[in-house]
Image 1 (cartoon, rainbow, N blue to C red):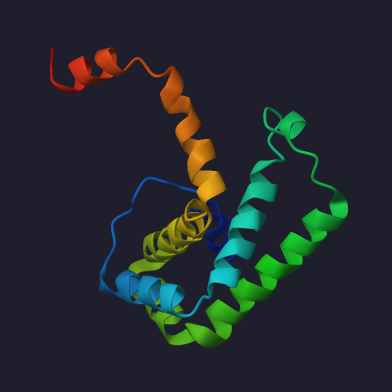
Image 2 (image 1 turned 60 degrees about the vertical axis):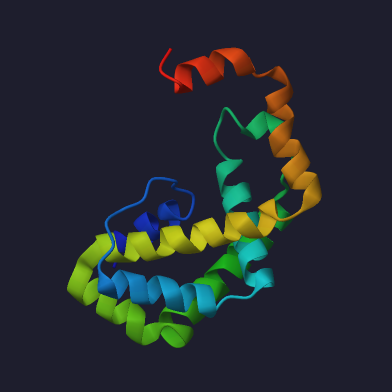
Length: 147
């Protein structure tokens, strides 16, 4: 479990899907069903704050230690609850039968749900779409058409 937890936490922000088995699928379903919109927003906040520690991103964010500590505490409480109460059976079966890969896959699903929670906000959707104004549409369309 010592090496599993960091992998789980990193998988929340990962975008590449891992291979899922039936136990990972069951855990992913439980994680999705057992978290609220607030849980997912808190998780997304924690992911954002953790990512803001990267040296190339840090200058763009002014996250104070108080916010960092609050996000850490909230994420730890959520993980404790998910792994030891809400989805205990599914988590145990996933790790015992599918190992780290099963857990990583399930938590990637939770990370994706957390991001969807934020993407539903019109301000976020508009901010994400802003880059399209600078996109060379003709060049992209030609490349996608195989030209």
